Every structure is written in C-alpha cells, then in structure tokens.
Image 1 (cartoon, rainbow, N blue to C red):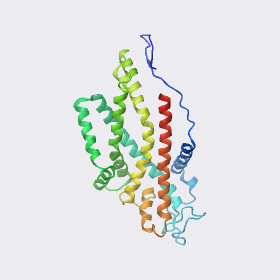
Image 2 (cartoon, helix red, strand yellow):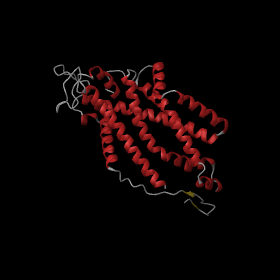
Image 3 (tube, rainbow, N blue to C red):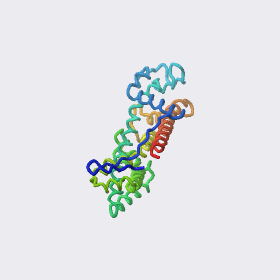
Length: 289
C-alpha cells in the first residue's frame, strides 16, 4: 500500500519495498557458477587456459579431446579449449554491447512513445511494426552486408535487430506504471514532472526489465554466433565463439569436437543466463507483491 506523508513541506511518496530473498534454486545457482567462470575467462583467460589461442603445434593436428587438450586441437594443432577461453572476452563483449544498444534505443523510444502519446506514439509504433516485419536475423544480415563483417558491425547489427521487441516491452511497462496510485499521489502532492519521472516512473517501469537484460545478453551471443557461422561475423583468426563454429563446420563428420564443444559452450551460456534471469525476475516480482 502506498504511504503518503501529510507534512506539506516534506511530503513524499513512499513506495512499498520488500526485502528480496536471493535464495536461488539449484539450477539458478549452477547457472550463476557457470556465468562466473565465463566472466573469469573474459577477464583473466590465462587462469583457465594454459596456452595462447594462436599457439600452433604442427605435430599434433586434429587431436581428439584428452586430459592434455580438453576440447582437442584444430587443423593447425591449436588447443580448442584455449581458443574458446580466449574468445570469451570478444563474444561476451558483443553480447553486452548489442544488449546495451538495443536497451538504450528501446528505453528512449518506449518512454517517448508512452509519455507523448497521440501522433508521436502512432509514428513510433508504426516504425516498430516495420522493424517487426523483418526477421531479426535477416535485419542483422542486411546491416552487415552494408557495412562489412567486424566485431563492431556485429554489435550494431544484433543490437538494432533486437531493439523493437525491447521497445514494445518498455512502452507497455511505462503505460502500466503511469496509471499506478503512487504516480497520481506524487502529482497531487505537487512534485515536478521531472521528479515523478526520475524517482517514481522510471525505476518502477524498468524493474521488471532487469531480467530481460540478462536474457538479452545470451540471445545476442547466440545471434552473433549465428552470423559468424554464416561467415558474416568476426573474421578469423579471432577465436570468437561463432568464428570457431564457422572454422569447424568442415570437419563436423570427422572431427566432431571442433563444432560440438564450442557450440555446447554457447548453448550452456545461453541456458545459464536464461535460468538466472528468470530466477531474478521471480524474486523481483515476489518482492513487488
């Protein structure tokens, strides 16, 4: 229940807050551990990998997975596990960058559309519908075909292609929150429009979308890897996860580990961020009730 101070000088809208219990389940805990290992690989790859990603051993090409080479070696004798570990920074950077661009544009468009209403809302909504008419992967392919494959292009391509869905969610959240009782109380108490927007509307509209951001990182990495698998991502010899899939597809029927093991890492990361994001969302929704 919203509590309104009766003191006209220090009147503030006190919104209900409950402590969030972060007793995550087993699945979310394991997901958090795996994500922590991925972050460690991105920050300090030397801790997990014993060799550099470009170290070539011509005496041991296409070796099967073993204790010495956990993910085997590629056609040049390079340790695949080391390449996966060292490629984490680039892959995670693409995922975070693309999600940041998508959410940044979505917040601007969603808030402007919901708060302005009228013609502005109609125009933005129609523009988003045009974006929705194109499959996300096709839109990303279009951007890359114009500007050429690179890490920066992948970030912008994936970010722009995933923006419409986020913008629609932001618009819906703003329209829902602006009708809440504590927003009306803030206006009745004489709070400025800016204060209501920054202290009440924005935090409460964005709270349920925190989990969406975590889901978006995993989705962005999967999409960027898909583009790289098609030869439109980060060019070799960069050990980006999608580029590893692209380089190993010619050996899928003979040396399966070149394709399966890097792909397994991508799948596990996507599942982990999805599981952890849903757990966070459930805790936030439980605290808001």
